[in-house]
Length: 129
Image 1 (spheres, helix red, strand yellow):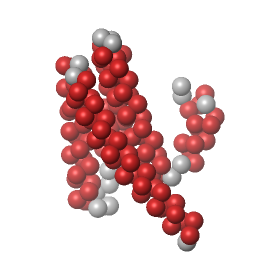
Image 2: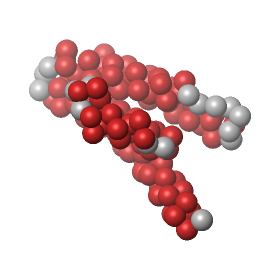
Image 3: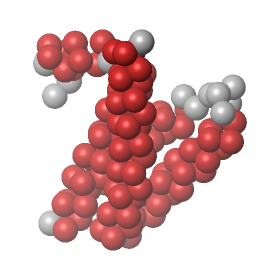
Image 4: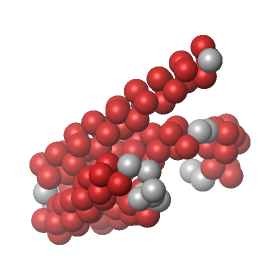
């Protein structure tokens, strides 16, 4: 469902902070990886491949918005992680490797949770500041 067809989601996306948008992107990547995992389990290669493509597109976008001006060491680590995920998902797609997809989901979840914590701390600082 596109955001244009769902006014609530459209409002949520257009009013979200940059950190919240990052979390939404991670959630989308997890959702598509989970869909791929289920499709591969169900022997539905086409659906799995389409879901992997969507997850890789999200990861590619995350990689494209990295900004070297902000913490170059962290940016380099994230760039390597995103590259690893893209390569891993591409291989998993070719091999229909559910375990590889599961491992990447776990790694994405870790970063998503870290961003949620950062967002929570930022919200607390704004509320008390």
